[in-house]
Image (cartoon, rainbow, N blue to C red):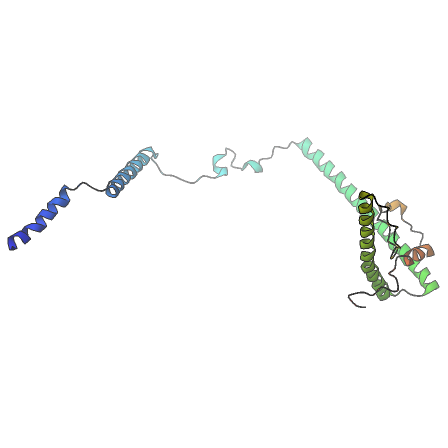
Length: 215
């Protein structure tokens, strides 16, 4: 009936009021109370007065930063000046000696090239660069051949078989680089020595070698 329908909302409201709060509502209330308590405690611990930013100069008694305070005595300063002057003198002496040796080597090399040009004519830098590239490419073939030769001989030795004979070198490899001579041992005579060119002719690619990159 109409009276029963009118009484239903009031009964529903009374039921909701009587129902206890859920877990989410209880947790939110607890967190809010904890936040308020923390803020109150923080306000009590905060010192009264105005807060201002400080600097290193303001905290020191001299008005200077620690790295600006001079703690070196006059004797120590003079000793440091003398030490730095000696170091600078040694540095410039070494530089002048290096420039002197370099100038002597350049002059000797120029005289040697002039003497060689008078005997065999001027050099051909393009052809020399081409021959150097051909040698570096052919050098890979010789190194791979030697590696394969060592592998086959070790394999035969492990299996107890007679060692295969060594093959024929494809080209002559340059010796391993050694320590360069000291500046005092450089040849600054300026005379041409044909032994250098004779030695360099041995380290060339064979005529049968064809470069995969073309001429």
